[in-house]
Image 1 (cartoon, rainbow, N blue to C red):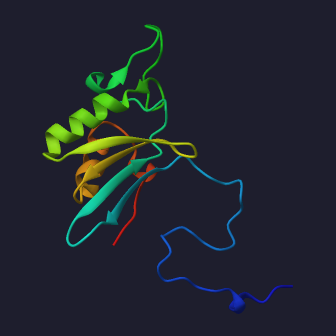
Image 2 (cartoon, helix red, strand yellow):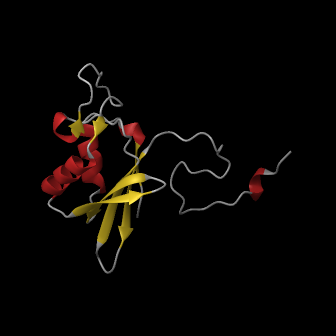
Length: 134
């Protein structure tokens, strides 16, 4: 028997991050985070977009012609996606290669809501997008 009231509570932890979660129960989430730079400058990062995320034809590599295109159908092209973000949001951005998380898209400014709305319009379910930050 364990005592439940001795668990620590972190008020700054992201929603859904509980201390007693199982280790192997990770779902493929798309994480959109904002980081404070210096002064009022911020940096928005997009990570966890699966290799098979299907977006509109301008942002994807189509693969074999007989492949079905549901939300995990075709591979996205991060360079084209970054170019579309930069053009639509009027900001600068870059691709960062990370060993653990793959390619991360970084954009200047707080672009969290714009990115999430863009991804939802492209057919990615809202339940798979997690917004982090202040």
